[in-house]
Length: 103
Image 1 (tube, rainbow, N blue to C red):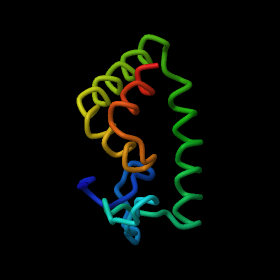
Image 2 (image 1 turned 135 degrees about the vertical axis):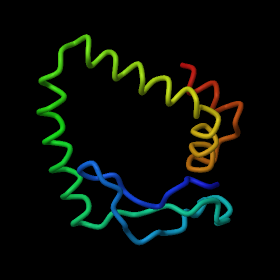
Image 3 (image 1 turned 90 degrees about the horizontal axis):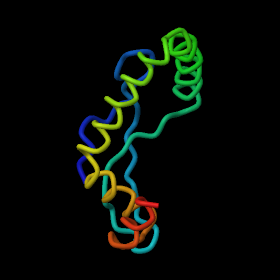
Image 4 (image 1 turned 120 degrees about the vertical axis):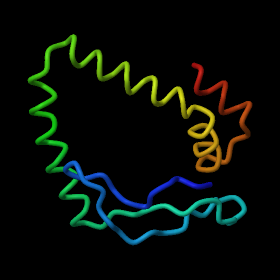
């Protein structure tokens, strides 16, 4: 699977990290290349999230709702791709996974 860029989004920027292969646990077949954050990347991401929470909390309910609906639309546009990624991660067939995600 092609996940696009192999960077982490931290503090409003795409940050370079070392990419690691994702191995499907059942067959050990390489299905995608992904990034893995180290300790420093994780700390930066956490600090950024805490800072972002302050900004998010300051928004009105109407503004937050607007952003959440935009996020929902973006997820729905990529629904098949996301299901396929989760299918590889969990090792479940697509029909089973579709039932789980609908519930």
